[in-house]
Amino acid sequence: MDIDEFDDLKIILWLILFLLFGIVIITCKHDSGDYIMTVNGPVPSMQTGMTLEHEHILVDFIGADSTGYFRWDRKEVITKALPHIRDIKNRGINTFIECTPAYLGRDPLLLKDLSDQTGLNFITNTGYYGARNNLYVPESFYSSGPEQIAEIWVKEFETGIEDTGIRPGFIKIAVDPADMLSPEHRKIITAAALAHLKTGLTIASHTGPEKPAFEQISILKEYNVHPSAFIWVHAQRGTIESNIAAAKEGTWISLDNVRARADLTPGAPNSINWYADRILGLKKEGLLGKVLISHDSGWYDPAKPEGGTFSGFTDISDFLIPTLKEKGLTDSDIDQLLVRNPQDAFTIKIRTLDPEL
Ligand SMILES: [Zn+2]
Image (cartoon, rainbow, N blue to C red; front, side):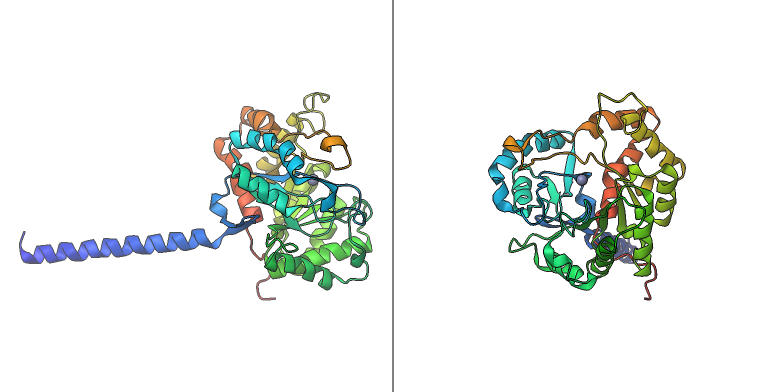
């Protein structure tokens, strides 16, 4: 090889190195942009793994005027919850989204302890639970406008919940299942729209039937919030046609009460087979990318001796996934349901209809 050839080779090698460096930079940028917020801080969305998107560790039904951390002993709750968290860890679950709102037993420090002890990501929330006729909203709610309420939630995201420094990973709200939203519940979804626009936190709303779902979606749109910022919680209570219509607009369809019920015949509403068929129906419409699944299970109840009966979080792994595979879903479809969809849904990102507004 003469000197000229050697120089050419050097130039080509440098060019290849330069290109590789560029690719690495672009890839890293893409990865580091998207994140979810756990009780231990931000985690890149790509690293969340298999996720249960709607579960509970503790729920206290006594009401906003009487609840408080004094109502339970964290160590006792953890002792009760730990075996169930280990069960899901053994099944490959890596992220646990805890949907208990403030004034209903939300306890960020409890979740941080559980996360530290198990290595799972735990995600908590901000927002108010208006369902059950506002039993779980604080007194200050009534004299506040949506802007003031949104401000409280935004502050929790920016500086942490109370003095814990723990930040919420989504907005959890709830409305009653009536055909029309009450003025209070219009206020809650409006506050959620305003808080989303400031934080990029996704809004998960305990809703149920389709009429309040579509009313909330239309209020979000009035505020320029894209339906993909909205999770229709308990969407299994709506018809499949309504699930399809909402998903086509971008709404996340949360089918979240998956349980293997011995009392139900296969195919009966809310049986494992029924859930599998609902998921298949959505897939047929090309909407598998908008479906979220969970158990809505748990939990320690401070009103009951030793917290009452704690139901686990394994029926999706043990019953629903095998049924879905029997019905033709691929490994990639399952990955979409348990990994990619929750990553997308809970990534912190402002989602607007019109970016110009
Ligand atoms: Zn729930």
